[in-house]
Length: 291
Image 1 (cartoon, rainbow, N blue to C red):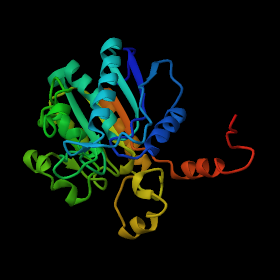
Image 2: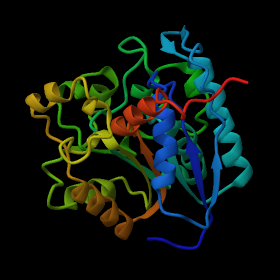
Image 3: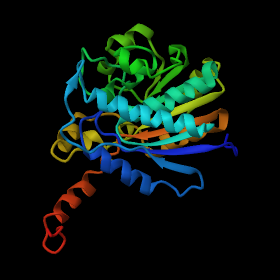
Image 4: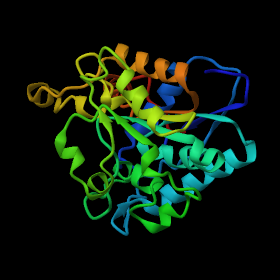
């Protein structure tokens, strides 16, 4: 249900959560690909210093992620939009906009997490923060990062779509709350199971997280598991992911039923464009000349 209330578009090329600088370029290209809009657009300042990868409390670049998240929160609080679009960047870019929306709408906000992974690990299991972001929104995991979320998201107002790997459901936080998940196969031809799960939350407003790694890598290769040096390995594994058509329909159906107040699109890794860029930087006449 679209309306005329203020929407803010954030471009947040944060890469430290995945410890991969390629996410920075992926966010910039994603922003270029997105439809032109009259909505205010702000890019969150993100450091590209490759040396800020120190592990703190078990989390790579924790302090840098906190600083950049605070910058995004400040922008949101100053602009005070009713709706937020965020173009990332790794999944950690969702922390500021979803925390902002949770504070603004309280119990009337539910989250739909469309992703191949639940992103609810803790530092005891993994060191890259993009796999912990949702745990933070729930008030779990690292206490410093959780302190940035003034209104924690109630687990009963969270619905997953697209998690097909049972191993992804094993982390402590997932088992603790036993979240509803609608697999890619289940929403391939109908959105009804997702819609029903969202209705059960009692919320009228929805924030949608869309990680591009939920897409079928045969159809869309600009994602993590389609990395050229491992592409064939993952093809052989026969991973079950979603078509672009089914995810588009799902998001449209949710928008028709609820008030979508947040949309985050993350984990864009355009491998072919990155390879071409690297090639161009090594060709004559194109290199930057030293003065």
